[in-house]
Image 1 (tube, rainbow, N blue to C red):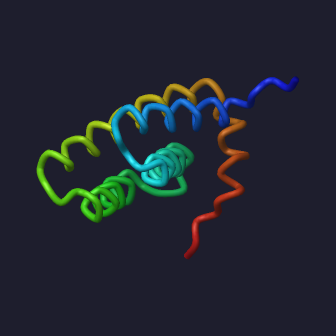
Image 2 (cartoon, rainbow, N blue to C red):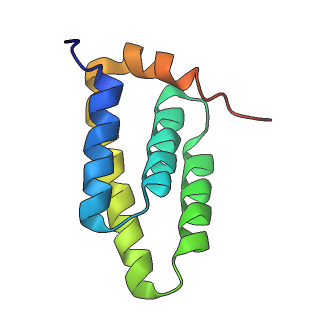
Length: 102
C-alpha cells in the first residue's frame, strides 16, 4: 500500500468539503488550481481575484448561492495555503500537469 501524496490528500479533502458545501467537484478543482497558480506566481493576485469572480458569477444566480460559493472559495484558499506552505515542492510538480494556456 502506498502512502497518499499531499496533492491527493488536498484534493480529496477539498472534494469531500465540496460535497458538504454542495458545490460541484469541478468548481472545487478549479478553485484549487486557481489558488495554486496564485501561490506559485503563475498568475497575479488581481488575475486570481478576477478569475474567481468570473467562475463564481457563471454559477451563482442568486445572492444565497453566491455567498455559498464565495465561502467555499475562502475555505479552499485557506486549506490550499496550508498545504502549500507544508508541501510546496510537490504541489508545484502537480501544477506542471495543468499548464496555463496563453
